[in-house]
Image 1 (cartoon, rainbow, N blue to C red):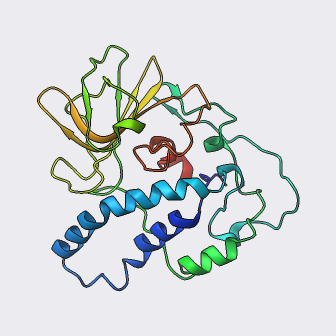
Image 2 (cartoon, rainbow, N blue to C red):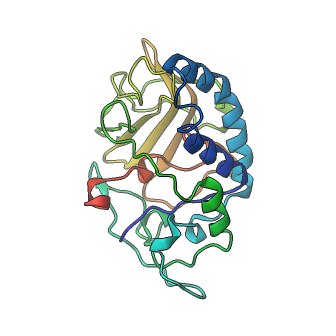
Length: 247
């Protein structure tokens, strides 16, 4: 089996717990109440995620949930590459990148049992596929015109524009969304990935909380403790589930 590595750490674990637990005590609340709560907690969540990055487990040694699917292992395991996906004729990072490694033979983290129990061993995960769910992306040509990006929250940790993101690029949740509003654009030819968080189109460009540029030919990491569109310093597109991952 192939799977994406899942890194879990202190504050990040709390955030994940919150997103799962919301399905039980809050499920009777109205959509309006949920939207209001989400708006009120957005800044707090981003600050917590920034703290979480300081303590995160390295993806190459992180936990794969559920633990029941993992065979018992001991000692270091060989790193085996899985097929590297191509998007826009661009390889999704080098073959030896952690995003492209099999993790089903990795040793289980010593705290895995505690984390799974805390999250809720009998709870289920909700895959955000189709409809209003999921995170869309657009592939643009090397000739795509670049537009100015105005950063509204984390400009000091953003990669400066302009970015080759068309004003018609799809937005997570739709044009009227009050959520994270991620916008992803992969430029073929240069094989660079441009990601925005809380992005709003203007007449000439985009306003966004944060913007990041990833070179898909490189394993280079972002500066330590810097944020990204996903608030953890990681690319979003590389972690999206593809048909080939679950077929």
